Image (cartoon, rainbow, N blue to C red; front, side, top):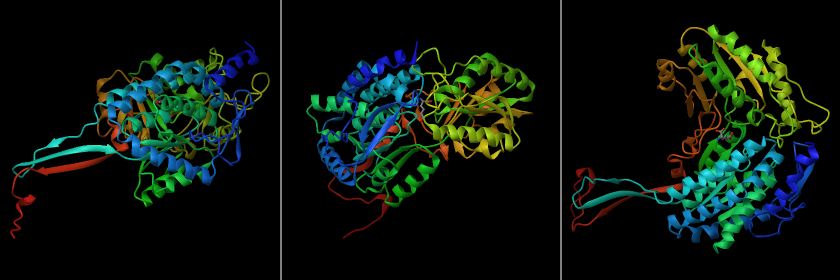
Length: 517
Ligand code: UN1
């Protein structure tokens, strides 16, 4: 298929998602009041302009916050299972729009169409999860030490949740946050990446329909667009008790400090430097699939992307050969063409960082095993298509210690027992995802033990990326410590209250203190 044929469905997708070619407004549900600057969205797939959005001015931001705080006052009174029903309807609309939204994700962000659909599937999954959870927002009851007293805890809605999301998961990460926040009775103000504004507008349009159909206040779901300056308004705003931020460690550090400075809570999901340990007992075929998908999926632009392979010296050559051969089969090109495995990087700046990493790994003593390079010519006109590369490196190299958001995989050799590999795996500043490939129970359990992986995610015989929504997602150290999506991640979106009730006619004090009047 030619590029024009592949892009054919995009116009229809945009129409279905109610995105006009030139969009003129700030999507808050408050219509077009913005006087902000124009933000243009270019596709990394073909370099073409997809659409324009207006960025939010400070005055727009104030209006959004007014609308959100008003909406919260009403929304928190709605019983949680009824809020679950709203999220159920949102999930239904996502099912209907899966193809259109997945296509837009692929076209605006550059990930493969399969991964674009997968991202929308994550949104649907978290909605289903949240619907069930809306009947389970329960606290504990405790036995009071005082007679005739009852003690329990309950969770109340928190308020306005600020969501800052990154370009690489332009829709799913927002949904992880909103689906939970909404069933918890919170309202959301979203600042998406300025690299993927149309995906955000599409999501906002879908939720706006649900809100309208249910006669609810528009401020339940708000969208503000712009660069870091609009993000700063959010992080500094005392009216926002929780900021959930996904992105670089550099950004997260600033957000954490500002939010802590005003005693707000932050939920941070920042950089990763994820490794797979490959022991002599690994299944090589499974290792290759997991490592290649982990390294080149989303063109190496997932927080969970595999950046390091720590391979035992006894099987090093075998794994290396198998990887080189697998990389030889990779098809790089238009991500809307399902035959291709690898799409473009997000923009030319990302291409520069990729080039820089390849240069640095050689300068620092590494050896290129699979050549990188920027592709040009037919189909590669955007200048964002690069070849996934492999380099032999040392864990201590400065560039290996650093997260490069690109398809560059470092092979690192270890000798001795699995403990040596675990030490290398943990020997970076980031702590998001990790994996071990082994059929040896002892090695697997050591990897999962308290002296094993120090990451938020630790997998056995699975790669580092592609987590399901049911588990809590996030990581330790410079990854920021936050947990999103499944398990009990909902708790951060609520405030906990401990209640002690005395149903007697006397007032005994705790700890046996006597205070008689
Ligand atoms: C991210 O890269 O920020 O585990 C999120 C994964 C996806 C989510 C990644 N489910 O790779």
